[in-house]
Length: 197
Image (cartoon, rainbow, N blue to C red; front, side, top):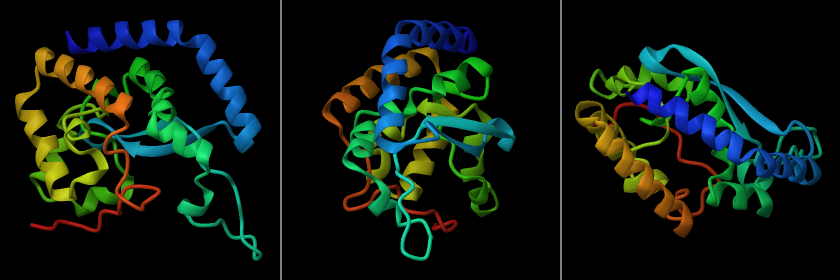
């Protein structure tokens, strides 16, 4: 039922948003250059890697020696707008359609984090990762890693269609008020360095 719901909703949204997506792609190309998409290998269900696709939100600005500037320096006002409205996440609907992701589930983090999880924390990979999730509507990047992982595992143990619908509804509210987008003063979420309990 969940997979059927994911495919139907993702397909419908991709059709309904096709024109806005094309306009957004043109804006990104104009303001940030190429490539339009940010692609990165992330762990999916059971930790199996997949290529996640998002809209690019950072420039390719480099220092005098040719090295990329820090994330904070490369995140433009336009990029901040994409993130604060979660428009950068829209291409993940394609990942949902392909079966790599679900509309709702623990957010896919970095491959390098896999060996750092505790046995309990690793349970977040028992389900498909999501575009949004229980942690995203309860603090997103403003909560600690321990709290985030606790919420991910709680979702795994309590998942249901009713809970997914509730999370999707609350996600829309969060996006509209731009709540908990990133930790204060950070361009991205803080790096996870290992089990903290």
